Amino acid sequence: MADKPSVSITYCRICGFRSRAAWLAQELLAANEEDLAGVTLVPGRGGIFEVRIDDELVFSHEQAGRFPEPRELKDAVRAALGQEPASRHD
Image (cartoon, rainbow, N blue to C red):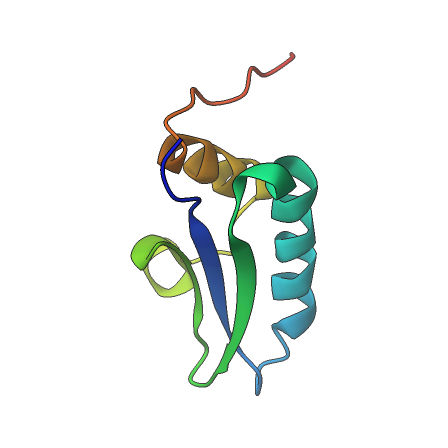
């Protein structure tokens, strides 16, 4: 495997999005700790909540009109690693 991907979560500190960002970072690390170079929390302003993998935007609260689900971020990380999405159980 080449270089490990890095995840950054930029969140609005004014809006109080830090807890959600930290929770999602924890979820990503729990699922992919061995495969990630790191997860960085980046305080911002203006209602921002964005997730990037190696500087590529994979989720934007502004564009989606909602917060990301852990599963969709985990799938985005798996895609960055060249892996298939995790199977889902009904």
